[in-house]
Image (cartoon, rainbow, N blue to C red; front, side, top):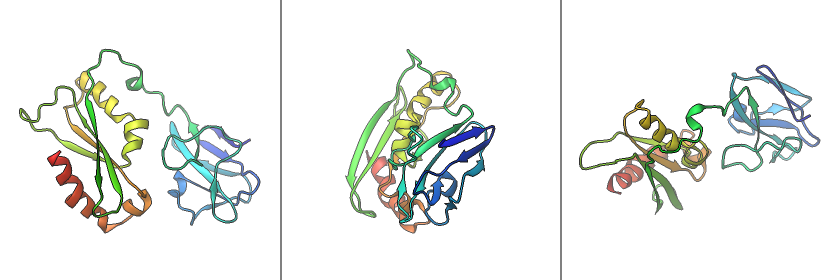
Length: 203
């Protein structure tokens, strides 16, 4: 049995060749890690979604061969997932025909602070009128995950339709190497202030 859930406790049983467990609980770092000397039991909040992988003796992560449940993130093909409670059950994410939809524009540019092509999705709410009013702008890290998997744009549409929030612009930024860029990297501030913000404002 790959994983066993009992209340808030999850027991991970290591497959052959596994020497350690990594995942959300270790911030996906390979050191420190949870050594796999036998089944590992951890406690998680109710209604949570946990993603993990096993590590072999060469510190290479691999997918749990006994768990077919793939993760919901776009970065690690070897990640597998376990659900505690009912994480994905939410009425605002049910199909809602007739709800006005915002527009999404995909942007790409040559990176200056970080090399390579940079990408972002820009969501504007239904009835967007930049000449007639000001809109708050929220910059969302791990953009493709929150845009495609988290469906934050669709959630915004439905919350606006219900009158629970005010219109806003969402900018979904996609990293190249999220651990390198996000983790206490002073260049990321330069990336935002010198490259992203001026580019988005001019778009």
